Length: 142
Image (cartoon, rainbow, N blue to C red):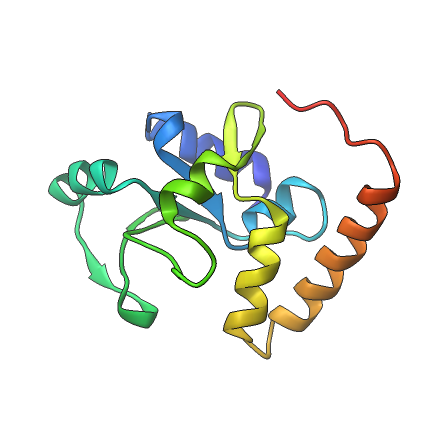
């Protein structure tokens, strides 16, 4: 699945753009750091309540709950050690009208989580990208 297909799926949900942000591997994918297979979303408590009335809610890791819609996984929270969901959404980078959690927050989460399969590679990719981007002017975002 490519990023454009995933973003089309996301757009078809007609979610209020100020009440969610893409987390997980999405912020890496939108920057071309690595391919992604799905989109993980964090949402405000208000949006979660609306979605939980429409879709099936199932258990997820670390006591979280999720709603799975196609290749989109919507979570009812995130790791509070990183930041609050509301803050992560408010501070997110915006690409083509979609909020993506800042890479610094993704990096912090991946360091905390420590998934031995994916996180070491992703941490290296993020650190290299951030190091390079800090030495060059940032692209204009919309």
